[in-house]
Image 1 (cartoon, rainbow, N blue to C red):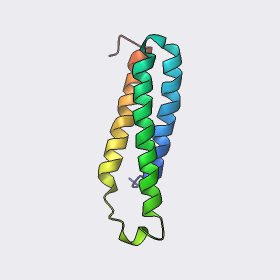
Image 2 (image 1 turned 90 degrees about the vertical axis):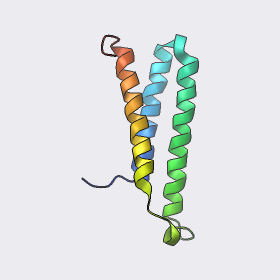
Image 3 (image 1 turned 60 degrees about the vertical axis):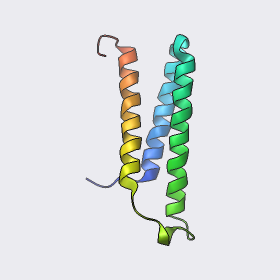
Length: 95
């Protein structure tokens, strides 16, 4: 299995953001809670992009320690959690 990049994980976060925005519109009763999750997911996406840019910059790139596995696991777990929440909200009998 090919190693995922930080940028790919950031794009996955962006996809989850779009889906959660739709969910927020469909569930106005939970809009405040979903908006808080959107904010945190946006912060994760931004952090992943910042690290990706630092890794590929001329200034920091040569000294960048390749410890992306932990970041990727965190990002993938976050996206999986959001996908699960999205599935449970559509089919209450599943969760």
